[in-house]
Image (cartoon, rainbow, N blue to C red):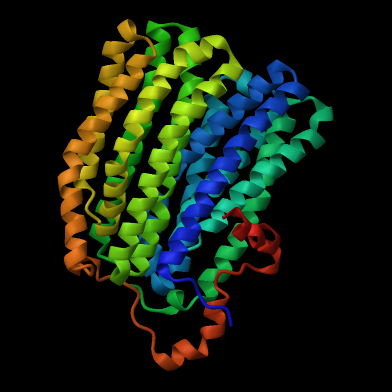
Length: 460
């Protein structure tokens, strides 16, 4: 009988898998578009990229921050976990379908030149919505590495499918290679998730969820943070192109994609931490210490990578990109480490279900970034964006560092907080022994999903 991983080991395994997968999928994502540019005309690539970008945006909106809810509350949902997942996924799929139909009916005709395009787009959006939500769901189930395996499989499979369908020369072939492989991966993970919920001891126990009003408050705060965080990335490029022109916008897009990659990794570390703390509140002190170390390591290494490797990568793209983007990357190497404070605070705030200060801070950060970009971009160029983010990170750190230190100190004295007493109820000894074999296999998917999940350990 295989021993289940401890909370600390499980957090480390999931976090390393997420980091490794994100790095790999980032490289393969660039390769996907590079190959598409070689095998398809620029016009077809342009249409396909617009399709995929629109679908990703709609799928993100349709998720309604349910992912954050699953990360925090699935570990204590008990026998209600299955019904919560079914209802949540149906809602997300329904919203995604409505949004997609709305775009096909009222969106630009150039995006849907044929009737077939209008038929294919709605299910494509639904697939991407489910695909994205699964990352948060498997984190809540304690197996974020399944999401990492899913994303790695998708990155490789869509590239291979793109080459196989390249003879058609149509934009729909690019979209199909993306959507079909995402659907296959999502189905495999869905089967594995269903088995975990049906056989896991934790999901046969009575639920230990907080009150419905508290869950609604948590949902509202999580959705507010997500919505506020998405405003600046939408507005800042518009500010740049309005004040500096399309060339500067291109310099920003390429340089900032590297900065965004580091931010994404930091955000992905939060989910596994929140889920492990919710499942094991008696170990929150050790898990928090491990989480702080991982976040700090990723931020510092990411900052060094931006300062050292980033300019070299820009040089391969073009001299102008390196000239305009390097100062921004150097500045990012300074403010990325500052984001450790807000990342760790966000994780603990989700664990403690106290998100008010995080929402207020995100409001101020968004205002500083947008206001600073509008004020400094005209005189400082692309570097003005970096200065705005530096000011925002300094402000966030100044606001959050004291309550964060207080929380960390409290963990040393009394790790088991009264407001975290929503752990999974204790399992009777005889019941635990009777289901030990099932529990030891919780991390194993069904035969249908075995090929996708089995290689997860190789990611770390």
